[in-house]
Length: 162
Image (cartoon, rainbow, N blue to C red; front, side, top):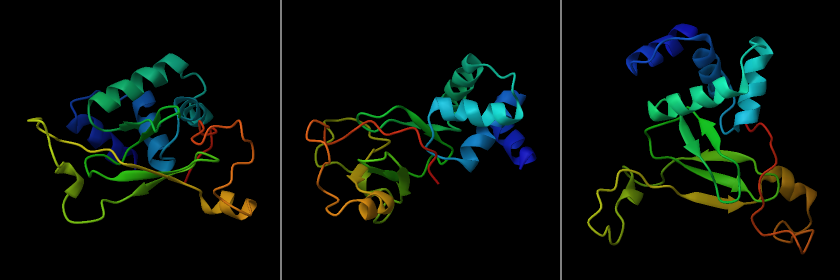
């Protein structure tokens, strides 16, 4: 796996460094995690990697197109290595778990807006909101909010999603 990650970095004209390899490996094994979770995963094998180094690596990898940054409304930024395929996400509004959703019809049908206002559209972002199976079994009515002061879309808890 390390040789594949090294090849990805080189193909993007990036130097191969331990922090970059560690961040890519963490995101391949744990998609949709936030920066703090990436840091914890990286530090499990490389305890001296700094918080700033992880931020810098995430920025560089995102700019190079090796990592995708997603930020559903009301949530912290999350990262994944699945890039370039115009997939979407489903987010649990109770626990914040995120899962991938493939584009449903044809080749990137959502890249054809009804009115593009003369923009050259190269990406569409769709987020589906709902209740994950784990939260649904914990509630008798998965649409009912337990706390009336809690907003409908809450910031997800920091949880590693599979």
